[in-house]
Image (cartoon, rainbow, N blue to C red; front, side, top):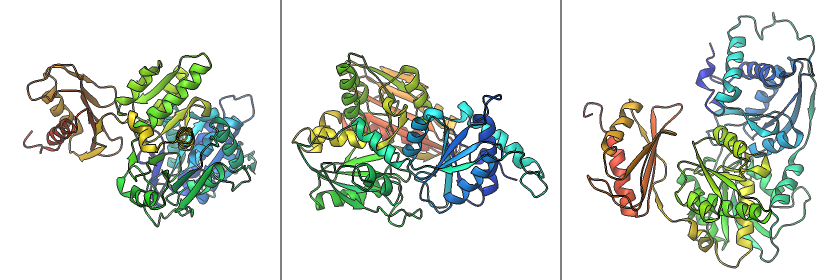
Length: 491
């Protein structure tokens, strides 16, 4: 018996195809989506939903099954075909219709999944409709005759049509951030055999007939291949950036760009082959978006999650804008973006959100900002981002623990009575110490912070830490990991 609680996560749906996620399950989810999202006006037409997919071999069959579920409820389906996740968000915003993207992002080839949104790319998370869709679909799957030959045919089946939205997506992004012609940039792009192999030639190149940009593109792994034959399409893992890090200086390029499987996240490599932290990109893009708001006579608000670098809120304040700190996750951040009418938002995971993109995330638009900023001056990328890389981060470190709550409380007890320490629980546990706060009782001096967050799906604690001094960061990191990983017997 299928149990959808195994695959319905906080922000999306992901599972092993053939066991956790089957065509029957996709059909039930399509029916549930139509009932929960497309029938809010019972006196009006059932509505329509846009369906897009990435390059995974299992995507087409899952789309077909989901489409059958939707049309069986009398609603219309518009197939937009192969696209990036932000391409689906573009279509949802431009066509003012709900959408579903079939992707498992950076997960291995054996996985697939769905990211759902309402019209205007408004997010659907567990607390904003996904739980209802899950429960409706589970009820269908639990019915003994649902989907069988004994089940009656629907009285009215909705229509299915196709629409190409790639050109509109490319034109929209180019219109938001024009690139200066004063300098031609050489860039190496690692698509990881994911959807950037389709979107980069369209947006940054001339593949769909748009005018040439002042760019020379060196492609890596542009062939769409959901088996990921070269490396995982997950740039958050440093191992998957190594090919690009070698290629950028080897080609004498100005920078490198790496995208994940569904091409909604973008990572940046400087001219030396060194990664630029997503926090530095967040600060850079924030400063540019704030400047646009200031030129229009408006004061800007920028969203950042609680594990971005401390440099991010500092840069926002230095540019006379308001910083709003949020928990991690796109469904949460998009809600906050709309609530505050924020011009921009950034996450440590290289998700970047824009008001001009229906408050949704798009790595391609962030990449255009980086290219524009670099092209407006003559220096190298490393010099451009240096003012935004002020502190030493640990990166995200996962620890498997048998009791997440007990391990977290062990850390709380170790730090709660130390001078100058502040504790909050907005998203997991954050412990911080300001530069001018007193220190003692084993607590390091200077500015530092760390966050421990439990995984939504596994017995894991995720540690992110940062300090002004590299030695302090290392000491802090090791102390917290020692507390987290101590055996239950010792605790």
